[in-house]
Length: 445
Ligand code: SF4
Ligand code: SF4
Image 1 (cartoon, rainbow, N blue to C red):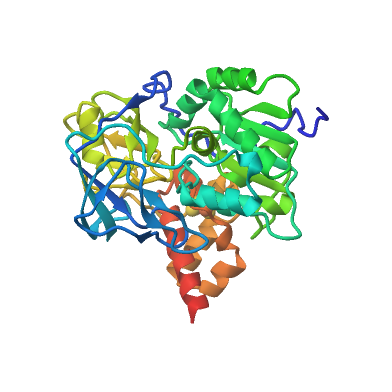
Image 2 (image 1 turned 120 degrees about the vertical axis):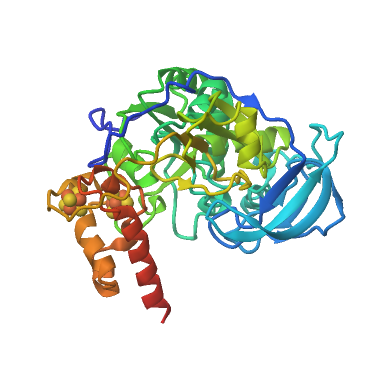
């Protein structure tokens, strides 16, 4: 294969090195979580429009049956992860702290693993629009955490072309190992999914970017990809947030996605490795997105594990499956500790974008000890988007939407690297969120 990747380029510029904390789970095989009595499926589980329910209370549903259709193009379907009866469609607590519309399924006591979902035809026989429709109707989103609908990324607009497909196996968030286990245990499906996407987009070169702290996954993927067959597995330095797609492209190709643009503008499409394995399962075995692998870990978890969880399972039930919480647990984060969200309720369900449950026995020691900015510049050196978080924070506090916009706050993807390094404990990432809200308000007027 012609070598397009600089061998010296193993990481992106800037970023931070939080402690990895992956030892508790990186070697643990994925185990399956049994069905619980009630599953709660929020209608808003992807970036874009929420799904629209197509079932009614009292209706019986089979595992795999569609229960909500996409609410627009940037939206996906939802399916019953278990056979049972629709108990209600009502407001339920969700991970963002609000109560939102959700479909509640009461599980059949005899519910089994059989699936009521049509397997798609041979993907090679499908027109592009049909392929896209299958992916959207099967409910696929990016499983790395962003939950961006997969079919949208595969819908290349007229006049654009794709030269490379990149599988994202970085999993740079501390504590999380679900993608690691998928790559180590199911490398064939990851490669199969990558080949499916490459074939669909007419691409002959694919790359898998994996941080070098996952040597078993790198070996397994290399073996699955074979030699000189159009796919290159690339070991990257360990750095956060290398799993962000713009950083991944910088690391592999030494190319910068310009402000406000997408990887597609560099003729690339990036897909999470779990999503790719899921696409292989869809086209080979007819499995829509009804479950996902979740890492359950942290000092507050009695039995850390990687668990295949039916969507809609409450956090509390997943934690119970892992032996419960240890005394003194003070904080539960859904997702990784850098970009995840602290949870108030364990009734919140696992959704498509939920990659981890991390339980801490202490909250961040810096929380609540904010000091004035000492202009040390560490946040500038950390920001992978080359923003000035310190100045943006001042502009957000002064509600200067015009300044925030001029300083490209839209490029901030809330990775929290700036907050992580700030010696004054200034809540920079929270101020970035406030600032982005101010700009949205200004532009809505
Ligand atoms: S400003 Fe945004 S992108 Fe930059 S480090 Fe902070 S959170 Fe990350
Ligand atoms: S890291 Fe914190 S203290 Fe240092 S310049 Fe940035 S905001 Fe100021």
